[in-house]
Length: 332
Image (tube, rainbow, N blue to C red; front, side, top):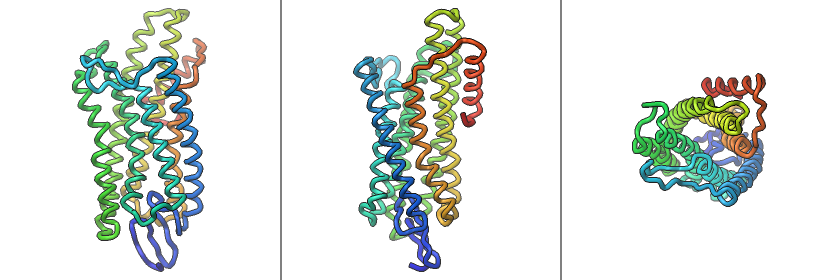
């Protein structure tokens, strides 16, 4: 294997570099990516435990539901936070399984399964954010305090279905074809790998814009309600804390989506260069592995932590700073 090229490995002069999506054995990046996956298992396990606890508390103790059955408000009626929690928990379960398969090197020659199993979890993470968007969009469309900002609930249904199911159809096709052609037609297999992440770039960038837009509009509407109450009123404090939490969640989601969009665009264009650079490959693999799970942790913390706000200059600065972050999509 002095000089060889496969979908999973590129070898030159006996030095092999692996595609850590498919394998992490017998290559320069093996040790580093083994530990990256080990940490991912630990973090994913934490997210799963916390997510299950939150879902139990919200559904059993607080009586929340995952779905609203009011048909007049639209057919696609997820409860934003609860549905996002469910799908993000599923995402982390699948990511944990994917890391275990890579570390244990289970069925190493089944490139189709390896390619599919790496991609499939991300569709649930993306879907969780899409459900959050649809949930708040449907809530706002029935309010219509700001005329014309959203179309009818039926249109939101169609857009929501598109956002949610688009990756499940397009990306699974690309990943399966790429894996199926890995041994028979490497050139086409690599083309579909590039296309896969080009599509993912479109998914993440467009959903990030939609979440940002919906989040800003929701905050705008809530601030209109906020002006109806005095600062000492209990309702004022609840709305103020709600706005604060929404801004945190929207900021985290937008950073996650746009961060992934940038990462995916680079990988789509520069896959060969990244794959054959040990340092570059490990850096990319580390960011790729942790961006999703860390975003999930921050979102769950934002849900579980009860904000205690002081209504003065300090809290006003914090609130307006988070608004600026949400608008600019910069790091918190």
